[in-house]
Length: 132
Image (cartoon, rainbow, N blue to C red; front, side, top):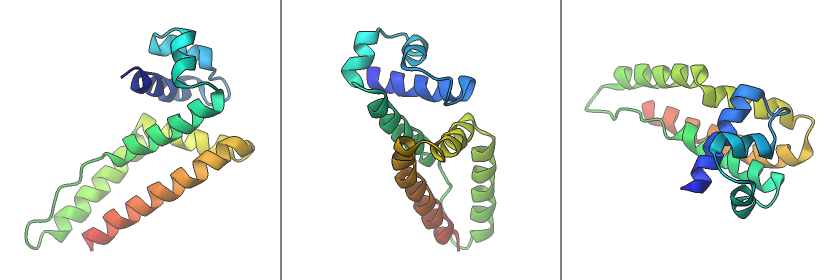
């Protein structure tokens, strides 16, 4: 539970402060945990970034899409478009995009973001393929 609270706080800090202004101390404060608790769960900034990117991707992929009943492909496509629009307007998208931009010049972050981007793209592709 503490781990999830910390990861949610990291996403919130990325959203509020941006990647470059987010520190582990600010994340701990946002999460309401001690520095020791933070270090217990994430012994390094890189460990925290790795977990935060995975957590962010998981949260973005948890969006529900209504199932198809009979020949309701149009309804499903419209529902998928609604989901995409909601994603683009959500703080989760803003954070993911911020991390994508930051990873352009941060090799450690890029090593975490590249697999997360591929996973997200594959998931969206599977969802889109089901709609057709």
